[in-house]
Image: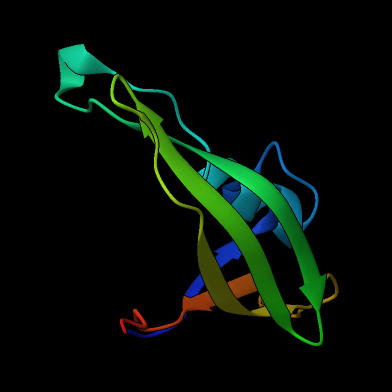
Length: 95
């Protein structure tokens, strides 16, 4: 996948890449929309140009095992073109 870039307006109401990505990885089950499971961020950090998060799905059947989400990030609040934030998710790692 390529990079997804956005302006501060596109990130709103989030002021940082971590806050934006934490929100993207957090949602409740919504059976009306066909989503029986939710997801929550257990812990996350941004280090050396990457976002690392331990996440967990949950639903009527209980909690699933935690898994990792890793995204490369670019953060430049003074970007001339206005695109201050970009991220690229990593490919799934299956063992």
